[in-house]
Length: 328
Ligand code: GLU
Image (cartoon, rainbow, N blue to C red):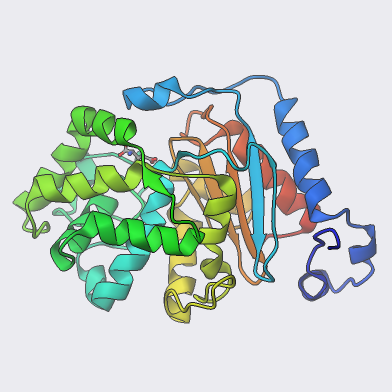
């Protein structure tokens, strides 16, 4: 089999430069080079420790993978190592909820950037229990509530969905992380009870939280994450299975909210410098969607002051630069 290359039509469309394809190293080489580059960076950032089980991970792990819509999956570093996906899971929950309840979801959660920390309580009080967007904690707990009230076992349904998307039946939620967050998730509980007080949580608060903690505890590798989200780069159709995961319109909409709200309070800077819809998680993972091309997934546990992985940001930024990937 030949080395995975960079989709020529994509490069031509984007740059109007067919010759670029010949000068570009293969995707495999690029991904390996970027992992080496990230490993050589001066150590900076801190592993999240407010969820005790997350503090125990090896801070030196570095992984990068890309899945393209023409069916290639390339990875380097520890691209098969499963890590706690945390907030990356909010994309799975949101997709399921959009599929299940349609546009009525947007009466209960907005699609605006928050400009506040991901677990802020004050904004939710001012705005009468309507979360700013589905990617901050309050919004994702609201989505968890929707799933909990529409599935007899929402955790099982979510796990089935993610396994199907990642094409892997052994994906699981890490029990230690799940319990650890359940024991210490008082701020998330506060957000959920506040929304309940405004009448914006339908099911039992503890059940909605239970789904949320379980979702955050899912463990996937970079290769699995990239494959699982590849439908967002392909107008809602999973390029590996052919399954229509969500409508084309909803794929566009999820990418739009990722662009404005996926990278915590660094979302504006990320759009400015990288220019891709992306989501970050406190476990150290970042996924970036390249519409019409594929999905990049990067992982390394040390986080910057915004809560974004330092090395994962570096690798995605460099990849976007090298390949000219900005959607803007
Ligand atoms: N489970 C984490 C929390 O609720 C997710 C945060 C994140 O990754 O942004 O705090």
